[in-house]
Length: 150
Image 1 (cartoon, helix red, strand yellow):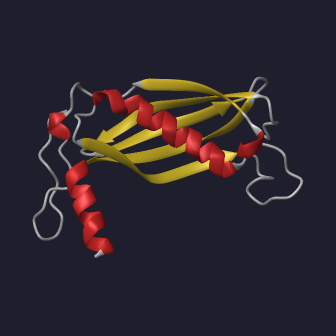
Image 2 (cartoon, rainbow, N blue to C red):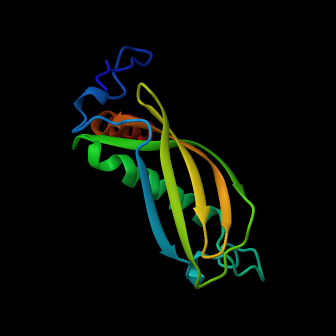
């Protein structure tokens, strides 16, 4: 994967994919297990009486897995930013259960990386969907953030 930087309006480059440490391939996978703790529940997010893994925490687990999947291939000056998630959270996961979050790279389009996502607890599949991240140059991202805060 050796790509030219995309140009934003005004001519600045947004990313630097060609500088990755190693080639990112479709089919690359990552899996992580996490025990659901009380602080991760819908109850703690404000949904009274619902002591199961909250959807916002599920999204966080997916983002962490996707970052871990591609992170080792990025150069030090690169980051990935989540830009889209499409998730069906169809089964509850009680406190104390272990969830396994699996991501697989299914599309690489310049700086855009799309992942297929599946999440399982100890008994069944609990969620599935897609997630998208963009590879960006850290310094350019931080400069844009500073401009916005100025």
